[in-house]
Amino acid sequence: MNLDELRSVQSKERSKDSLQHLRESFYADVGEYIRDLREERERAAERADDPFDSAEVNRLTDEIQTAEEVVEAVYERRVGKVVKRASLAAAGIPADEEGLTSEEQTLFADLVGRIETNKSTVLDVLAGEVSATDSDAAEPTATDSEPASDAAGSVDRPADRSADRPTDEAAAVAGDTEPSDARAPESSEPPEPTAGEEPDAAPEAESTADETAAATEPALSDERTMVRITRDVGSILGVDEREYELTSEDVVTLPAENAAPLIERDAAEKLE
Image 1 (cartoon, helix red, strand yellow):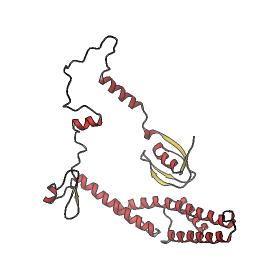
Image 2 (cartoon, rainbow, N blue to C red):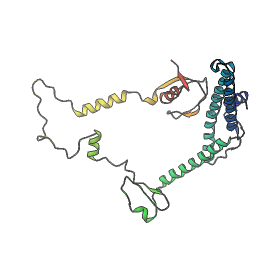
Image 3 (cartoon, rainbow, N blue to C red):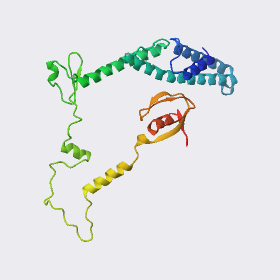
Image 4 (tube, one colour):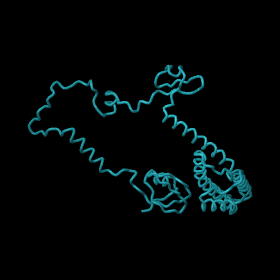
């Protein structure tokens, strides 16, 4: 293993959409190569009068940093392809598992299993088969906020109340309305404005004004930002439900919500 081999792997991975075949021990070999460089740098530093001014020490430091950056870029490029391959396999489409490193094989198997399990759960929910069938599960053994576990280890979750109408008290706490049992004013007639006072604006007019103002505000997902990609990112799914393949030096316009994290991680720079 050396830096030239690493750069060759990176170049091939960037130039093709499919995974190039790597030996199972690829990442382990890179790790051993970097450890050897660090040990060599330590020996060079011991020999040097001033390690911080030693040309050999600086050369080895640069090689270590470059190797780490290249192998990280290779991994980030490949992991997106592994995810795509796993999604195909989980959908029953034959996917080639050859050419994966040992770490990628583990990731692939885990992803396939998780996708298949999640799909099964979704289908059960759609079929209404998520409730336990045994009688013990039907009897609550704890409060609604503490789900009970049966002997098999499954957890019975309380029914989802997200669609229920909130109580007046809860709505009042959230600031949405007043509780229904709040004390009403003694007179149902609104007080007459005193001289020099303007009558309060009708609640309906205020609500309409708020809705109009909200409608004129642009949705965040409609905002787009032009950026230059500074390192390989791989495939991402934008908030606009489009897939973007991001490679170093690409210039692309992304939804602002996707561009911002890339800029924060120094994976992209904003273009005016």
